[in-house]
Image (cartoon, rainbow, N blue to C red; front, side, top):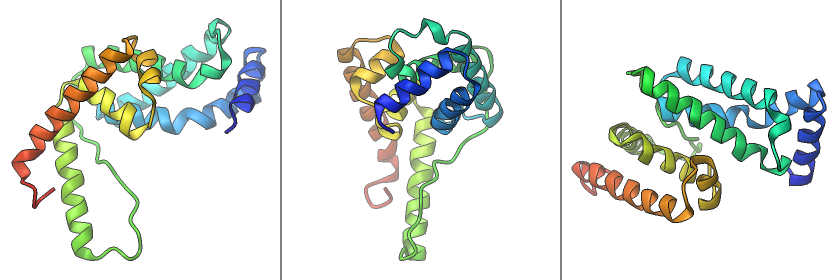
Length: 182
């Protein structure tokens, strides 16, 4: 979606337009939910966080200085809610990292891909939440370092450093599977 269209929708939502709020929800709900589910590993907790994040965003929409930054702002709200929930609730449910499969993939390819996803999923679960967060935002949401810094409240150099450490920690955890298995 073109940034100007998103800005228009946010401005309409700021004026109380329910349809515009629905459009914003439709635009961002899935991305925010996937981020929260992967960060929190509990579908129920993630859904609660997503709902609270949207409620808070819509309640304080007039405080958003740059309507073009709605997505990053919403991620920040969801992140803060998720961290609050993680501090108070321990979750044991795991979430698989699903990917699309092409029709030309062989059963062997499917098996290897499944083992790789499982290995990455297990390794991600073992990471500190701060590392998992930057990996999810960078590699699953494809956000820039600046956007991640805006969401986490860190400097760009701190994000770069944490991402480097997160990748190194993830690679270290994946070494146990050996190069032929990953």
